[in-house]
Length: 340
Image 1 (cartoon, rainbow, N blue to C red):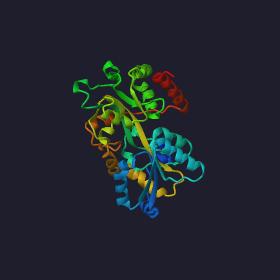
Image 2: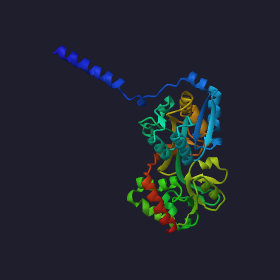
Image 3: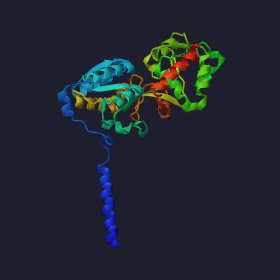
Image 4: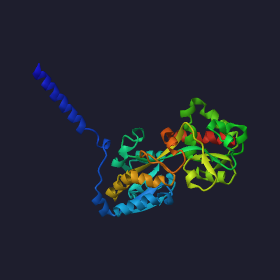
């Protein structure tokens, strides 16, 4: 009997070791060869963040490692288009791509990326990590209601999206045109996660408020500051990034657009690229980008925005419609908002 127990323990030990060493490599963070990265001397990044917001991150990285960052900026769609065009031609010019989830998923499907988990990102909340290790979340963009603090009295500040349907907000709301702006279409579609099947009823009621429609989320902040609208639906970060009488509404939940960094599968400077992603997800790098109002994932790092600590725990990453679903959404929103 004792011999049987010993044999059983040996077998269990062997199985445990087998399970440990047979785990996919992507399940564990990968150390960076810093000396090899320094020898490469540069990293080429295509990103959607404006250069001035990335300045602190890039200066910190260059000072710490002596590696030059060559940064090209476009919106997420342009980043994807350039990366895909170069890759399909067999001449990828990027080492790292930074963009929102929707376009990152498309590029991932096209096979542009190599697996990499930066060690610093291991401290991120587990629910926000990608299991396949091909894309790494590094900043998040929660959406709320912003309002003009000079035009909206404290007692009139809306407390929820439903409050925007009050008659007093008719002709006083700004938002991007969801028939043209992908993230806004995605946001409205994701409302079903908060209100179920009635999400489309809300969208129809919102359209009847005759909102001031703009081309993207950033102009919403300007429209509110100028007083052309009193309230608007856009990113919270703009209360820090725009000067003017601007504040945001604290809500129970925030639909949030995550942005990711990914390592090129054919990176010319692969070690420098890994080091760059690891730095961007480290406490130091996350603090640098958060100073400009960006929400990040590293525990304890918050942007200098009032009550930011109340926003972070209540973020919900938005799901992504398929290409066909996006096409239908645009057509539906065109009919709802323009009657055509």
